[in-house]
Image (cartoon, rainbow, N blue to C red; front, side, top):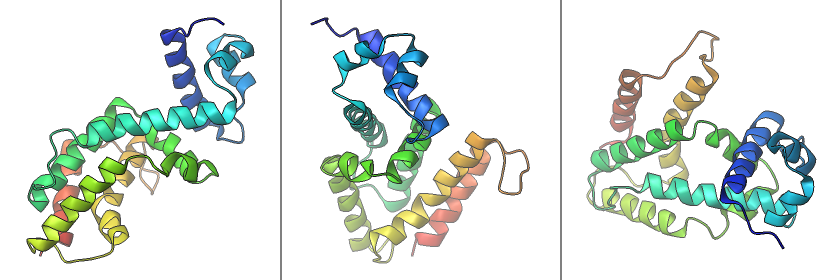
Length: 196
């Protein structure tokens, strides 16, 4: 059996993400991936058992990288505004460093892979975010609410800005480029909406 070539593995992951973003999961195949990487299909099977194994492995690895980036310099004991600002800064850095990754995760979220790649992963991250939310509620910085409501107000505006920036246009079809001014003005409005 041949040894894994780490550069080739990285190329395979990069091209797989690009193809899944471009063609969706339905249009993604090991043959297309091998052509995009200019390697034989047999080489892919040295690295991964099958298509599902490849997709799940990439998703899990990217989730771990995302988690590391998002929790960098974050403490669940931070004040609401300070902690949420750190989250936005870290998520923004990750989105800039990995511009297509949110689209990749969107493909997986709306597929049968969702259960596989989300179950059991990011447990530390979820515990840290749960602790942060509990602390800011106990300190009466925000009202108690279901996590889904909190997330929708705290992060959906951020991810919509990222999506508009990636697409290069707003909902009206006008050109759009995310700037620090737009990002932090939106953040201020989110703080205003959630803070007591």
